[in-house]
Image (cartoon, rainbow, N blue to C red):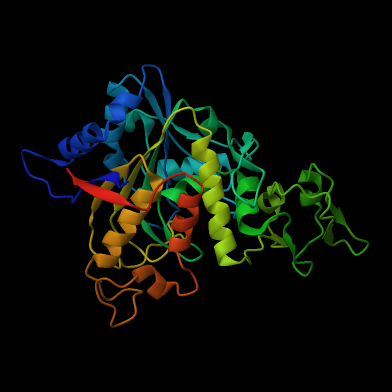
Length: 369
């Protein structure tokens, strides 16, 4: 059965401005019927890395947050800390980065709460379906929220092919330990030539997996490593790094399983929204936004994350390609734009596997707003 995906093509008028169209979309989708008075509603999004311009703008969120509040719920903006060391690697810097991009609770009426805590220690283990994991490790405040709404910027991704709702949920709700599981399993890559022998990572490792050898270089006991990724956060010399090497399809399946764990264990359905605008070839984590590969196409929403990602992918692929961009010359509407850029990734494998886990269907019906 085709799942409804509500679609607004971004056309507006004096009588039907942005706020009115968004409110109409939310009403048609039935979000108000799922929200209850007093609900603490997690609004899961990506605050954007410094230097990037593709993330969803704060004022684009304003009518969504107003709708949630009018239904009696209390929204909060949330994400989890990154695995890599950067502007969002721990909650202090993460919160400041959100503020720098304008996510101001005094303007939006919703605070920023980093869901996995100061150093990603606010963690919940929940059952994980599929063949790769028994448990998924998710941000505690996302798990504890009464209701969740995800808001994604649909774009490309070097490792996943494209990034949409499933990636926003699967990778974005995971703690650093959960992100590490998806990317590389357990344990960092050691670069002894960069290690300064300061021992800070050894002190930080609560599992006793790291020690300094007689030469003063860090070593790891992988049997003791819990994959918490705390050592990445404190190493400033590059002696410990994420091992990003993983079979692409394995990575996609792990991410889909985390998305399934985050969604199927919730007490109520999760509502999903995706902005197809400034569709860059790479992720918003890169710290820059390359030229868009297609025109801005619309705002889509659905209760089905697989249908939503499939609809977004189809619309992007059917759209007129834009040049100059990362797209190779000669590509025409109908070709897979993300595969043309990231040829090592077959992104639809993520959708196929996610559907097999029971979190949605690839069949959809666009419902114009």
